[in-house]
Image (tube, rainbow, N blue to C red; front, side, top):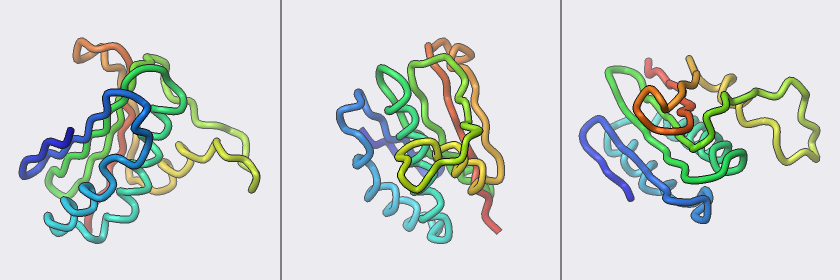
Length: 134
């Protein structure tokens, strides 16, 4: 499902079976329509990393939400696991397929964090980041 308004865009996935292909083209089209072409590539990378972590490291549904507010693009992924995300301290090797996600999020965003979804009456957590425009 894709829901959109002037400042809020949400992509939701009911299960991990849809993997990471859903929402990429609509994301790019909506960001372009809102004049945010400078954020297309970093937003795509960050959204993919956040939802990939939610799907690969937890069980149950995952959801991606993107919100534009003022001069910040906010990207967040929710999942059913209440445990905080743990950035890896080890360096990924060229042959390692995992272990770069949160390092990429930290390197490419102005700010990132997480919060338990219990604040909103749901199980799990929400991991988010912000991209600022000039």
